[in-house]
Length: 125
Image 1 (cartoon, one colour):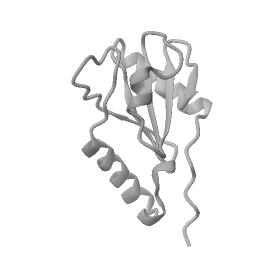
Image 2: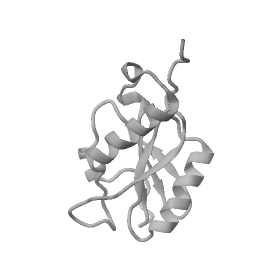
Image 3: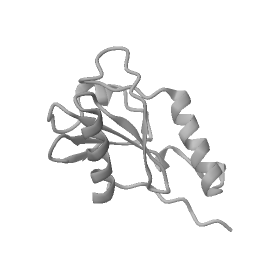
């Protein structure tokens, strides 16, 4: 039997990788997901407003990332739930913690983390 799926957590390695991506995308907000394999996956920020202070992840991009993870890991798709998905994004403005929009757009049951640029303070919500 396969091992139980690991719930992603915000390790120093994950924060370092998010910061690296955030520096590449600066001054835009970078975003993506971490799945049970603990790999940081960047997804396109498709916000219709301003990528300098908001982010939106396209559902199709999220589904593709999950499908790729399932294909590569051989994990049982019936075991995967929202709690196994960590959505991350950066705040290049230096704002610590989630914005009002971040909280309003949060999907129930999913984990979120925002990493503040440039110091890497990570806030889960």
